[in-house]
Length: 112
Figure 1 (cartoon, rainbow, N blue to C red):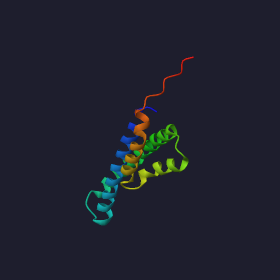
Figure 2 (cartoon, helix red, strand yellow):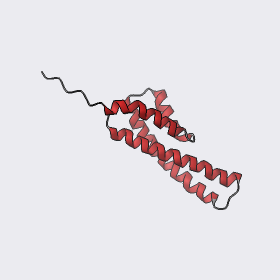
Figure 3 (cartoon, helix red, strand yellow):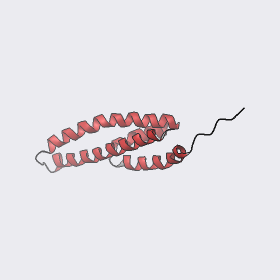
Figure 4 (cartoon, rainbow, N blue to C red):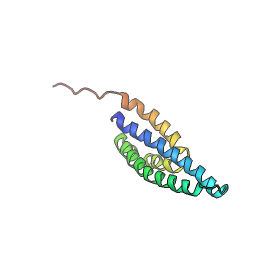
């Protein structure tokens, strides 16, 4: 597996996680504190998170298929982008797990 597959997953995990936390803060400002401008901010952040979450899903699915994960693990990683801060913890666990596989060079072909 190429390192770029893991790198793009990691980037999208952080982007998705940050946007989801920001969305939660905007929602608190909009509904809890009734702040001016919070409704517009909530709308912008929710649209951005929604579109970028789709990109996250594509990259996470690609990573999972190349890493040959079981379905349960794949679903767990895909859902991490919907729970505030979960993407950060899941990304770290997955990165530690796959770093060893990515760093290892492919075995040399056997000579006949």
